[in-house]
Length: 64
Image 1 (cartoon, one colour):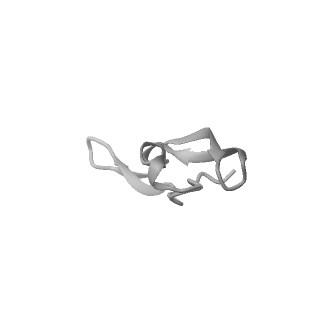
Image 2 (cartoon, one colour):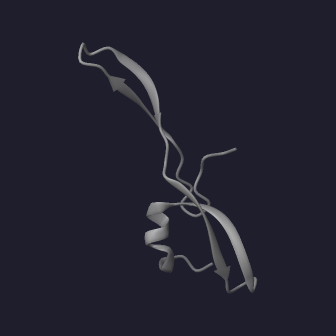
């Protein structure tokens, strides 16, 4: 399963977890994905999409 937002195309970020002794271990910073049902005016039906919470806040900007 791809962890990617269907509207903004955001994807996970790579980073380091740094301990107190400054030992670096790799970690993945995932995005906050939610499954949402949205009414599509173009297709005249409900669409189920995986969308990040940042895109949910600005959903009125996207014309689906």
